[in-house]
Amino acid sequence: MEGSKIIPYMLIAVGLMISMYISNPQIFGKPYYATLLVTSTAITVSIAIMGREKIKKLLSAKLRKSIIKDINDFHVEENIVIMPNKDIYKGAIVYTVSEIPYTFADVSQSFLLQQIRAFTNFIVASEDNTSLLLIKKSGDARKYVRNLERTITNYKVLLSADPANPYIQRKLQKLEALFNRISRGETPINVKIYLIASAQDRNVRKLYEKLRRKGETLSSSFKASLGLELRKASEEEVLEAITHGLLGESKPITMLESDLSFLTPIGYVKRPKISGEGIFIGEDIDYGTLVFYDFEKHLTKHMVIIGPTGRGKTTLLYTIAKRVIEQYDVPIWILDLRGEFIGLSKTMGISVVDPEKTPINLMLPWFTSPRLRARQLIDLIKSLTDLEPAEEYILYMSILKSYERAQQPNLETLIRVIQEEKSSSSELELKFYTLLTKIEQLNSKVFLGSSYSNVFSIVKKPVIFALYKLPEEYRKIYALAILQILTNYMLTLTPTNKLRHLVLIDEAWRLTDTKSGSKIIRSLIKEGRGYGLAVALASQDITDFPKDVLDNAGTVIVFGSNSKDYIEAVARYMKLNEEEEERMTWLKTGEALIRITGDPRPIWVKIIPESMEAQSIVSKAENR
Ligand SMILES: Nc1ncnc2c1ncn2[C@@H]1O[C@H](COP(=O)(O)OP(=O)(O)OP(=O)(O)O)[C@@H](O)[C@H]1O
Ligand SMILES: [Mg+2]
Image (tube, rainbow, N blue to C red; front, side, top):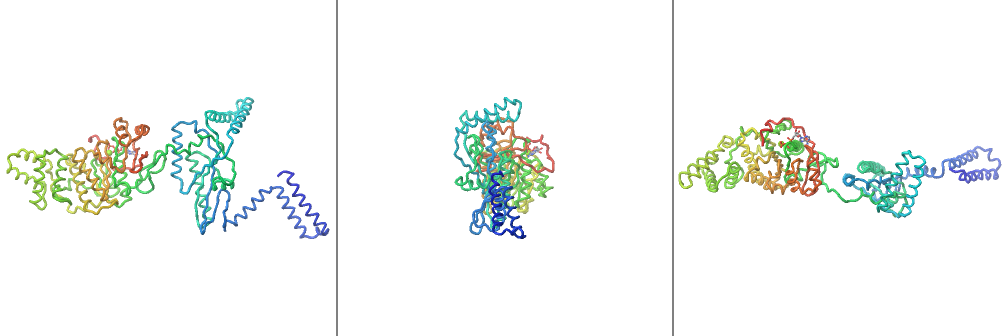
C-alpha cells in the first residue's frame, strides 16, 4: 500500500486517541480503554499494511462460508455460480480460454482437419450440460494494427542492440507472422471464449463438489484434445458468461479470424453412435475412443466382413464369438471350415459337432412342408452340381413320391424311387441316368441317417460345426443343409426384433460360389431377420457376397489391402472419397473400416482381438 493511502487511517487513529483524551484525560490509565486503543490501532495498522481489498476478501470469504450453508439468492464464488431454484440448487463452473496460439492459419490442411476432428471429438466426449460460448466484443482493429507495428519497431530496436537474444528473436518472429497475416487480409477481433459446465443438486455442498469435478475433467480434456489453455474465470467473467456478455466487462483476447478455425464446423465428422453397450471391438484409430458393437441393435441386420487373406477376418469372428458368448445368452453357431475356432470349445465350453459322427438326413422335412423341402433339396444338390430342367423336374417329383412312400425317407428311398420311375419312361431314360449319377455323389452315410434325434439340442445351444473334418466334397452340402434347417426352424417361432440366434460364417465364398448356394445364404439372412436370427459372414472379396446381402448389410467391416482392384471395388461399394480410398491402402493387419447402418460416415478401427488358443488345424496352403 502506498504511503499516501496510510495517512487517512493514521489520522483516524490519532483523532480517536485525541478525542478520548479530551473527554477524559485519565482514560489511558484504565485497562479497558487501553485494550480498545490497542485494538483500534491494530486494525488501522493492519488495514494500512494489507490493503483494503485483501481485508475485504478475507472477510467476505468468511462470510461466504456461512452463506454456503444457506444460499437463498444468486451467488458467485471464484468461478462457480449457484442459484437456488425451488427445492434444488443449480450451478455452473466457468472457464475461459486464456490464449490461442495464432499458428493455425499457417499450418497444413491435414493439421487443420485434425484440429477440427479433435474439437468434434471433444464435444462428443465431453459430459452433458456443457456450453461453449463465444462472445465477440467491440474493438478497434486499426488501433490494434498500429500498436502491433509500434511493438514490432520496438523489438527491432531491441534486437539490433542485442542481436543474439533468442527471446527477442522469437517474439519478433511471432509478431511479424501475425502482422503478415493481417497484411494478407485477416482481421483482428476481440473475443472471449467461455467453457461452462452446469449441474444441479439438492445439497449445495454436493453441487460444489460436482461442479469442481466436472470443471476439472472439462478443462483437462479441452487442453488434451485441442492444446488450448483454460483458466478459471474471475467473478466478473462468470457474470459475463452467464449473462452472455450483458453484464461484466472482462478484458478480451485479440486474435485473427483464422485462430477461430478450431471452432469452425467444417469437415465435421459424423460418427456412428457407439456407446459402452454391446461387445468390445477395438479402438477408434482417429480418436482413441473405445468401440463397442451393440448386437441387439445392429446385428439383426447382419454383418459383412471383407478382407484379403491374412488381414484378420477369422480373428475378428473368433473375437466376436468369444465376447458374445461371455455377454449374451444366445445360441451361436460357428461354421468352422478350417478348424480355427476349436479353441472356443476349450475356453468357452461350446460343444463341437463332428459331422462324420453326426449324420444329417437331408430327406427329412425339417420343420417345413414336403413341397418346400423338395425345393430346398434341389437347391442343395444344385449347389454341388448343375441340373438340367428335365432332371430337376424328375428330382422334384421323385422327392415328393418319397415322402408318400416312407415316414422317414432318406437318400436311399429317393434313389429307389428314381430307379422305379425310370423304367416307366423310355424317352427320358438318359436324364434318369444322369440324375442318378448326380444323386449318388451324395449317397454317403453323412447324409443318410440322422443322429439329430432331438433337433432342439442343436438349434438351442452354442455349437461349433467342425466341417473341416468332412471330406472336402461334403463340407458345403453339410453347411448349407444345417443353415436351411436353422432357417426353417426360426420360421416356426413368433416374429421378434430381439436377438435369438447368431450364426458366424467364415470363408463365406465356399458356400456362395454357386447360384443356389447364394440363394440359401440369402434366405437365411432375409427370412431369418424378422425372427431374431443374426448372421455375420466373412470373405475375401466383395464379389463373394450376393448383391442384396451387401446392399442390406447392417454392418460392414472392410480390412485394408494393397490391391488396386480390391480398393476400387470397396471404395465404390462404401462410397469412399479419394482420401479414404488412399487410407484403405495404408491399413495394417487388424485395422479396418467399419460402417454401421444409419451412420453414413465410416470409422477406422484397430481391432483388439482375443487370443486364439488353438492353432489352425488345417494348413492355410491347402485352401483356395
Ligand atoms: N486385430 C489384430 N491384431 C493383431 N493381430 C492380428 C489381428 N487380426 C489378425 N491378426 C493376426 O494376423 C494373422 C492373420 O489373421 P487371420 O487368420 O484372422 O486373417 P484372415 O483374414 O482370416 O486370413 P485368411 O483369409 O487367410 O483366412 C494372424 O496371425 C493373427 O494373429
Ligand atoms: Mg481366415
